[in-house]
Image (cartoon, rainbow, N blue to C red; front, side, top):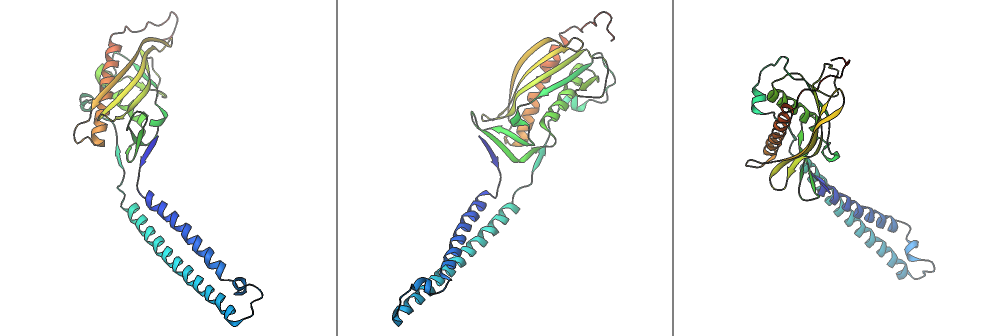
Length: 274
């Protein structure tokens, strides 16, 4: 179940319901607008009998006109409410993840003792959207139409992850795949993000499977699955959610950096170019 938060919906339903009554009123008017003999029927001989159908036609026409007028007023009111409601919708707010405080304050870095390639990184399909997504229950999702990512969540994740790792490992030799930049790598890190959203308990959740690979042999050197939960600061709004998500990504970056530090650099196979 996906719930989209937006305005203008109820007014549109009411307008559609009103249109049904307008159509009924028009049909009634068309039925009574024909010749009087359609109502009087053949074989009417007395003057009084001839006058009664005429009065019936007049009464039907009056009722149909009143119904059309009432429906028109209601439809006009609904239209005005719909316009006012849509015009009063708040503008969208855009967000991006933040790197670790040290990475944010770090100046330019040239070179480094280690070279790392990042990617590919995959995300669940329900997170592949511009709106910020949160869970509202075991199976429920809330898609916030008025709070959105400035770019894409996947690109933002990779950007901040690379900044964090560059800061934690003291290197500027980090490339995000796919890339046209080519230089020998010491490690490549891939990841499958399983969850990265707000949770009903007032926290941000990041669950990810990841591996450190030998980029020459494409063999896994270290494989992990980690889960991170960070509480939202008050007033627990969307800005607090993005801050908690950034903190969870920062904790993940620290674990990845620790794993890389604990691995020896892969040795080039005999005869292979560096």
